Length: 399
Image 1 (tube, rainbow, N blue to C red):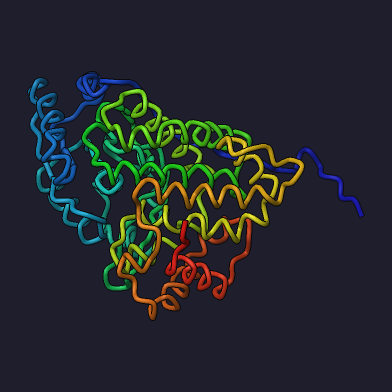
Image 2: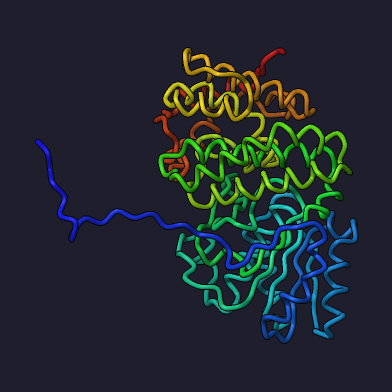
């Protein structure tokens, strides 16, 4: 039976979200005063982390603020994966200082804290937004974000990820209010990024690209961003990791991060992230490291459900033309991912990360509860299959 849709009543639409302004370019940090002056503010909170403070980048932001004679305060106590209690502490600090603008500079952790704090300033009972899934409707103060790693793409995403130490889980907050007013992407800021972080954050960006590309929510627009990110990745990741002062590679990886982040923000990610959350929550394994390690094992299973997309991904990675033998494309992509993680010097198995084998069933149960991401995966993974993926990742693959 064919059902005809009445064009007057049929509703089918796709929203697309981005920050209000994106400024991409080398040395664009120097234009920060221009953006600060576009907003009326009495005091600015600069949120960063210890690594960025040590590298002197937070001080550069402060110097620009001082040049405008605007009062400011800084919070740089972010270490490792952020938690909800940390966010609450920063909100209390910023409100006590009576700041009415937030500038975040750093990697994904610092950016997630900064944009969440900005979105929750002025809200009553912030716990309902952090712990009880109430959506943040609107942000009331300006927010400017400056990323210093080529990884998370947090400057263009509507989500922020935080750890729950008691439940040994990670939880995401999702709201358009988390999009900053201005995202300044200055590739020269990534020069301070250490080799391991460059590697793990770079592969994390690729994870965003490939997972959003095969997402059930992908659209021609999101796929265009993901395709460009994946095509830029192979020619830049090795140079950025092993010759970190090479500006073209840093620019290339900044584009990978940024484009993949836009695709992620609108199409979402899937099972790789779902399985990485318990590793971060229970073992404090860095997000990028967990994604990089798990990605080939997940796509070894889920790739069989998206044969055409795997052929396209293989083509974007310049692995060969598999249109006449499409089922070989997944094998080729999986092999590439295993080799990539190994050659970049990232962990290749869970055992080396001190994950206890007895905990694998617990991790599988936790990952199976991350329905928001598993439902955005083009393959319906059950708990048994998730456990098998963890078991394979625990042993690793000899190359």
